[in-house]
Structures are given as C-alpha cells and as structure tokens.
Image (tube, rainbow, N blue to C red; front, side, top):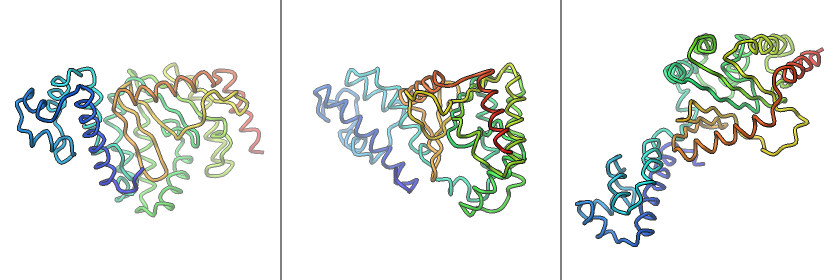
Length: 282
C-alpha cells in the first residue's frame, strides 16, 4: 500500500472511478449515453470517471441505475465513503500521543453489539491488563517516537475496555497460540496477563479461542483485525490502520474469522494452553 495517506485516498478514489467506467462499458454505453440517461452534462461524467470529482451517494445510484447495475451501488457507495479514512498512517493518528487514539474508539465500542477480534501477535486490547498495556504501548511510543503519554493512554485503554463487562455486547476473540508465548513486559507481566485471560473466560459474553501451534492450517495467519458487527473491519499494519466498510470486503474478513474459529480450541482446550504458557514462564 502507499506510504502516504493522501496518495492512498487518491488511489481509492481512482479505484471507484475505474469501477464506474467499467460498469458503463459493461453496459455497452458511452459517456454521452450516461449523461443523457442521468440528465448530467457530459463534463460531469468525465470528471467522475477520471476521479476529478468524488461521486456523491446519489451520483453512484444514478450511474448504476443508468447502466442497469443497481446491485453494484451499495459496494461502490461504501468504497467512496471510506476513501478518506480507509488507510491512515499511525504517525498521523498518534501525532499528539497515544491517549486520544485510545479514546477515539469509545463511540465505536459503545454502539457495537458483536465484536470479532483475531490477533496473531499480541493479546487483544480488550483483554489487556494495565501492566501488559503499559509495556506494549511503551514499546509502540518508543518505536514510533510519539509524545510520551503512555500512562494516560493505558488508563484510556483500560477504560474503553469496560464494554466487556457491560450488557448488550458479545465478544468472540481468537488468538494464535504464539500470542500466549510472546513475553511482553517480562515474565511477571505475562503471568498476570495470562492469569487474567483465564478469569475473563468465565464471562458469559466472552468466547476466547486459541489457534494451536499444532492446528492443520486451512487458513494462513493474517495481520490482527477486528470486525464490528457486520458493518466495519479494521486491520492493523506496521505503518497504518486500514478501515474496511465495503460489504464484500467485510464479508471476506467475516469468512476469514469463521475459518480461524474452526481451527481454534475453546474451554478446557484453551485453558490448557494458557496454563501451559504460564508454566513455561518458569
């Protein structure tokens, strides 16, 4: 992906424009035909096809309607809406420190009913202890050279995690077994974190699965991602956060989560692996 947010946004807009052009061509129409069917000037058709002007929701609907492709409108609208936020560098999100980013998730967490989280590298943020979060966020702040507000950021992360004990939310969380073995913050911090995982599994709203080392991989490991209800997915890369809202793409993450779910062990199987990780700390 591009390293610049602005170039990424422009690429996303070009992709939407290219899809509009393909829809027109698939319908066997010229730009003049689309203009006549929509009542637009031909110059508007050209601007939309060349990503000079971002299309409004109604522009997309009118275009698809003119091309007898109404079924494609929803994905195109979602792609257009997400262009400005689909790929945002962490340095942009964290330029004033880490606390504000933690707080920014609160509205999303509050309105989400079903959380689906897959983590291949660290314990999910919703399940982190104070000490684990402090060690992890401290490492992130040092690596990215952000302003040092780790103490406040940890408090904000723990506060946003209150949703896990509130009614009206359900949590399906999957971690690769390696997550249990990575020593973030040292042995004592990891022992406390793993012990907390054992306790949190008792909550009726929480399903915690562990994908064992020994699993016969029918699904390869991916970057950490979260799906909020069925309308939005977020993917964490080294340099950026990717927001996915196009229905067909969100469906791919839901499918991937389903595949990981089949590989995971739960209940006694998950507790055994967490306990083994604790014992391995020595």
